[in-house]
Length: 546
Image (cartoon, rainbow, N blue to C red; front, top):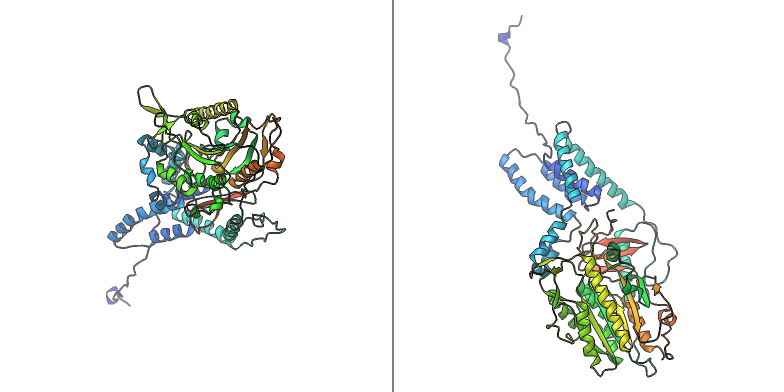
């Protein structure tokens, strides 16, 4: 018989159980990200987020180490969230010191555009739902499962075979396949595009038998795209209706003023990459230099100071242009610019220049006129000397009225004038999944698709009641070609307009490729793609919110 007292208890060896904690409140961070990805607000990077989640999951016994990890994780999480958005790299914002010159009213207006109240309401509901269901569900498992599903989908897409293009077509664009392209395909397409454009040039040949002398007016409008005109119901306006020719598919190739002006003033050559715009331009590419060789005197006028981000300096240095032809210091301001500088009425500036022109003896003058009347953030003057927000539509109507009235004034003068209206870019009145209203960091098709028109005055009566429309993909090279042909056209009979069929025959076409510093948007097989970072991945440009 064994007595309990005779049994000695064996020593019990204890083992430390290594328990893996969940993500806790970080689940809400990742769930919000997944929801924003599903809604199209984010470009979620799977690997960095998985690594971040893994670091947060590692068990730490020391509570001070756990606290230190949390302190470090908060700024890392904010930075990772910013990187997952469509916003440009933060370093690019630091490269734009001009932002510091924005008025306080404009900065406040921009801040308000970042707030999407519908999105805020949806996120609030998501947070309430999270705190409600966390009592019963292990949400860490669902979060990691969501990332695993996204990662698996990405691997399948990465290893899917890419069909090769068939039936290649010769031309400036590379052969295009209708299949979804990968980044390598789009990089190759972009390089072939620029290689093809580098060899294109418009010839300006002096001719003794050229048509009678005429003036050329290049009217460069800031912030007017087809999308903006549609947004305010002004697509069919009286200015475009009286044009002889309208480009329906013209790409401005950029969404910022300085690069747009440089591209227009270098229209005699094919489209350059953005990083070559600020280098020395080949002499044969400078439109105004070409015109000077044909006897045109170059002049510049602005309805603004031209000081923001050195716009006037860029025009002079990169476009081989002189300073403004006439002082406008005596003209009253009609708007206050987004940087607090005066913006003059277009009719006042153009009328003053025209009086100056009528007093000149030159037989040919080429004017570059730039207007910022429609620029985002401009403010209207009030009776008490203050300012108030200026809506886009009334400003656009005033600009159109001023330009239409100026064209009538030119017609009354009896002079021969070719007017070419080329907007720089749009105003981005409609935001999309990548950019808020008014933001133009990414040159999306809705911003760079601009209305370009040509009107010949004093060169005969146009028998057509409506303008001719050019539907092919076009850019600055086509404008330069028309100007060259117009100069070389033989003299017409009294009252006869130049033959537009000859002027417009076989115009050079340019595929849609737009570029800002570090950002490229192109059209491939009828679908826009965007690359936000140098040597980064290409992504389909998201559709606009409905």
